[in-house]
Length: 159
Image (cartoon, rainbow, N blue to C red; front, side):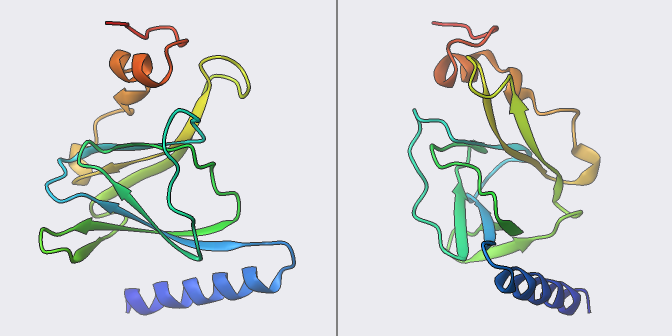
């Protein structure tokens, strides 16, 4: 029954979006690599020093590496989005992950002020059982990450 309701919501949202002139809609699937450990998943978007994602269509798949960190020069998508989550199996198939079961606290983030040094943004979510969610995403203050992708940020330790 829950799956039927989800499909109906998707169809209604897609239909409404397609009928509005100038609006766009995308179904985005975040696919975690096999053997991904539980923890925060971070997707930094719009970073010119990172590679771009493949050209997106209505159905857009974003592969998340085992490290749970993806940096891309592709900008944040501003149209309507229906998000799905999956775990890639070792045989190449994927298993859906349910929000509220193994996916929690999906949020957008912005660090700093847009257009200023040490400014970046993206999305994040927690992958794992609800009782293992641990505070805030530590990556946003990780010295090695900041040094690699944002050397102008305070706290970036250069080795």
